[in-house]
Length: 83
Image (cartoon, one colour):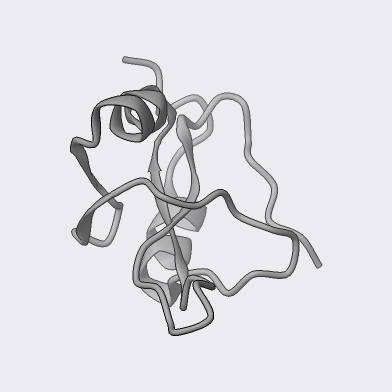
């Protein structure tokens, strides 16, 4: 099972905490328009669950997703991410 991004909802999972083997423990949903800025500038993003972190990893299929982010993401209305 892989995590899909719905084009009308501007979020996608991004990694936060790293373990000793440099693999993120969990991925969070964040606004797409903040991902590139964070990756380039090192600024922090706010995930749907409220976690604040700099984007350092891209999600891989099958990677664990924050259950709080997933629950919020699934409850968003289609097309609700247009800002």
